[in-house]
Image 1 (cartoon, rainbow, N blue to C red):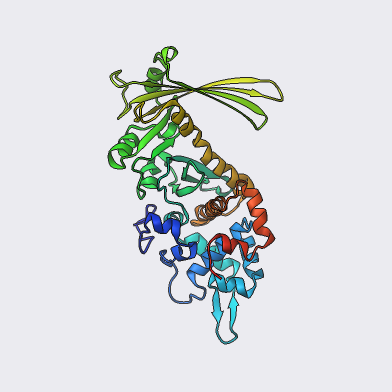
Image 2: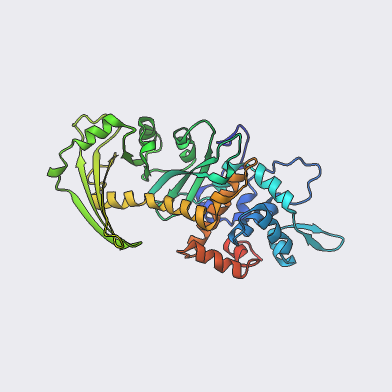
Length: 383
């Protein structure tokens, strides 16, 4: 059953090996066609594949996807499996309205699962949300999308958070289908919830590293009051980039037996960041506190520091979608359009990084040089 509705969204749930190994077109076969059988002209998988290729070539809207489809040569349409007019032996591209209708009604949970990368052997998975600001209407708020991303910057899946709720209600639904045994799940302070910690450790057999802020005032006060000055387990890291210099100090302290009121907590963490703006010379200092169920032997200060920085991977994804793909300016609003277009952007990012592109903007430019061959090669569509 779909995690976002009461309908069946996948004909068969793919295994982690199938998710990572099968070409995108072969994965799409597992999605049921939501259209009524009468009047169907264009193959369901072909329309979604055309949309994915157009997005990988830089398309940002339904109009741009439709223009890509109209301009595609016969060889490209054949690789996508577009409709064949047998009397003339000619491939017919779907119209913009056809693309819009299908993208807006296809199950977002199933599409996101098929387009994502399974977190097999991933050291950590980070959970965070982003709003598609342009999808806001006079009567409805902007679509808020909760995503899970590995430390390597690969999107696992995403779910749209139901209106009038928040990310907390979608946390377990997002991660439930995946094998997280031994994986560290990191999240910001909003998800520092007792039930989340119990579920991760007891049900998924995973670990957690959760930030503590003012939304948990008692727990935050208890962690701040710990004897941090006496801690000897420390790690220092220094970095320079983005016109700033940063020094981070990571301290870990075993808290078992200290009465910290949180399920399965073993260590507390204090991260002290000193940042110097190289232009203005302004120095800022920030202390961040976190908790984890991992022991000192399982998680050293060096590992904790690396796991804490993995949170930046999901922020990078959100930045790329918002700036490079202009997601925040997109006016796609109807049906499941906002979340499904975000999934196609996530797919393009995953595939570009899989093929060695560290800069997504540069990767999209390279796709645009041969827009009717490179995106299909990227998605593994055979000639």
